[in-house]
Length: 409
Image (cartoon, rainbow, N blue to C red; front, side):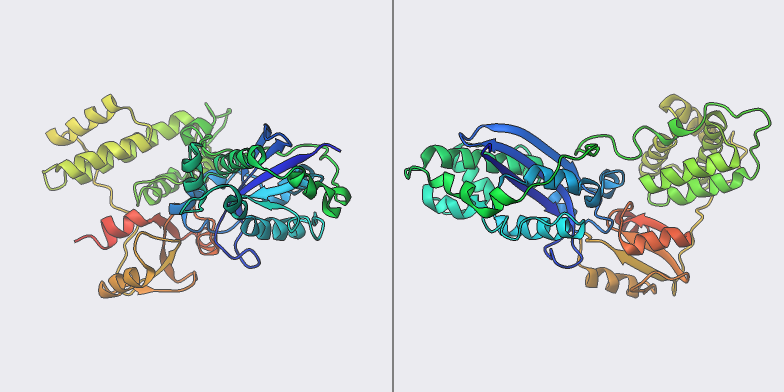
């Protein structure tokens, strides 16, 4: 039997492996007995819930929308781990999440599999006299690089580098052969999946990919209709509330365009119609501030209107040649309206709630049909609140809308 170490790292939605938290990214780096890296496998994972502290792991909801669930990759993970020795920096943390996820997916590991593994954090005392024991500090002490800390793939590869140093430095012959004598190594096996799952890597195009217009048909079939295009313009208006079209909103625009028979060319015409009205709104007081100008061109970019065309329409607005009436936001948030917060925001929840209460808004703990708006740390949030809001047709906006519009002085 080949002696392989599986160096593991996971990024998770939180710290509670036995509760509601889930794995959001996993990497397994295979290392042979001499310390050489044999293979690196990694993927983002859709946890089907809020991602927790994105400030730590840097994963956005848009990145995981089309990532596999853990159930989709469970056989692959079990196959890669079975018959190897698990290794991780702070193994108990990653082991708790992996054990829970594998059992949930019906691929339970050997009862002692993780207990028989190796922890590069605990082993560091055997080889290094360093004041700090976190992965980055140990790698710096040994001259090992971590390109992206808190990226599962790079952290696993860094831990694999530590393991390589340990293997080369170990003075006791056979010390690292002992784990391969364990029952868990000899008894646990898992068949190779018939079909290997599609992995989703950081930095790859998000679920939205190219501009959503590219996902509309080039032209309508004979007899196509463009009825009720106002609904499409209204959805554009709602999507642009926070000046960010989320992946969920892109998907809804594509769906609605198909339902209404709006092809790519007609959608572009509607975008220009919307932008003309938007420009008219900006010039309604005959003054275009620098902030309004920046906002105009940001919106033009989101609607795929090129800079020359946008400049032409802005010039028409400045000269008063626009005939379109100003367009007003679809949302009117009034004192007394119910607002729901979701996700880990830049300021504490009690502080934000107090600021909203001071403005006369009511902060509600759950989403009901009476809620007017959901404010999310990530507008593509997979939290239960955000999902229910979309089901009810309630706008989900980013935190920037809170500060730039609702609480703006």
